[in-house]
Length: 267
Image (cartoon, rainbow, N blue to C red; front, side, top):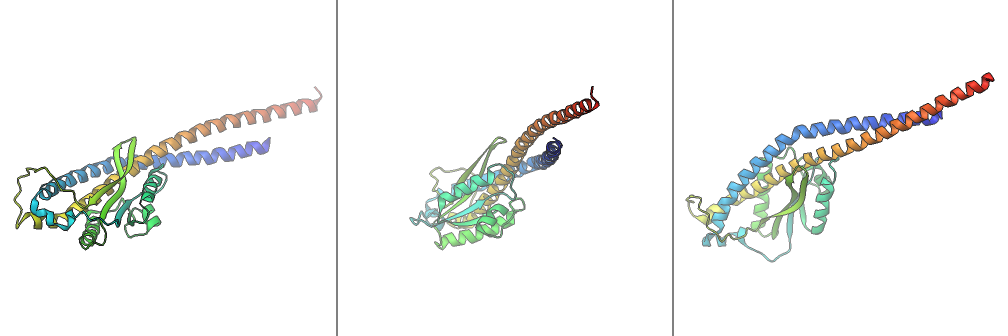
């Protein structure tokens, strides 16, 4: 009986430590959520503005000559895979890698420590990923696409829907789709629309990469908050069960001691 009580004490201590850890990680995630979602919304607004310019230019007949509108029939795919910097975020990273497996044979550029560990790469932190990093990556990818080193560019990332819903997805960036609608944005492009389109594409791709990284990071911290809340709830339930079991064992030990004392006294 004494051994059982000792084991229960050890388990209670272990579960209690886990509970404190999950609460601490949940608080850290909560503190990051507001700033992460704010940055995500700002990057979305920037990308939307660039997309309007690209949509206007791609509707111009002269811009059909751009290599970025060339819909090549090759099957060489280049993907940017954005995963998390840390684990303990539920199925966040697993869902991204499950989607990436559907594109077996594609070349993958990783952003985030988990993605870099799996696929290799220099961009090891999605939280610290800056717009300058996005521009460096964009310029290389745009140059390679124009030189026909690959035929299609996409981003595997996580789409933020709400605090309770995040969906892994692939956002296809290149080639551009010709826009059939004229967008009246009141801009005169010099020297001409084709030159302007070819110049703005690296900015558009950089904006898309940066926006996807900001959105993915927001999804990561939200997923971690939800996962830590669930883990904390499970730990508390386990702790309550172990406490009840410990009290029963302790009461049983006391009863046994009393019985042995009474038996020994001959009463």
